[in-house]
Amino acid sequence: VADGQPVYDRYQTAVDVLAELHRQTLPLRLPVNEKSDHVLPLYDLDALGIEACIMIGHSTGGVITQDLAARHPDRIKAIVLSGSWLKSHFYVEALFKQRLALLQTMPEAYQAFGVLLGYTPEWICKHWLVYEKALENGPQSAQAVEVIRERIEALLAFDGSTAIEHLQMPALVLGARDDAIIPSPLQKELHRALPNSRLELLEAGGHFFPVTRLEESVA
Image 1: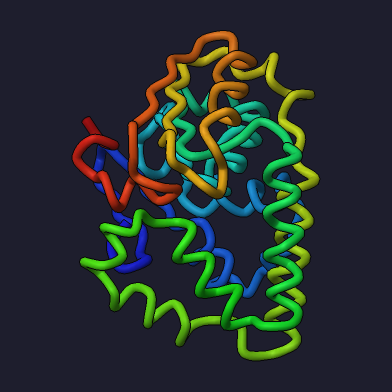
Image 2: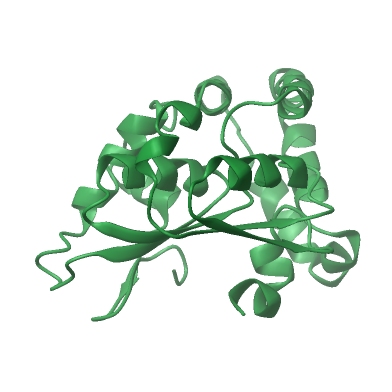
């Protein structure tokens, strides 16, 4: 994905899911399976000459990837689940309960802590503009706050354990041991549940380790 735009050639198709949902004016509060339904048809694999693809999803994208792969195993030959989870967990529920309180009372603080929690301190210090831009792009209206709230509730309601038996394709589960948003025990749980998976945990990188530790993430 470059600048939020899909990049495709004969060998790969990359989709920025949330950007696509925005472009289609679809609400982020859609349940996970309805989000998924709007991803696969975006780029017709047949039209691109692709019989089956490897799908990579980070965080929310990993949840959507699980749902798509379970419902379309003939079109997805392998999956990479990065910084993602199988089902809700008491840590995530507690964290997002507090984040929701910030969202409804201090939206700017909600946005700020999302960045401060998501990246490593060292990376943020080197890329402070990311923090400043995040504050500028935070929810500015009651409607925007409500959409984020409903999106969080939809993610907390996700339970992939009911469809795990359909994920027979090879799976790579990635995580970072210092992830403070979706902690590594959740990747371990996902790895144990998947029938054909491998687990790789980085020692550090935060939740957005594909950004802070790019080379190690794609190695």
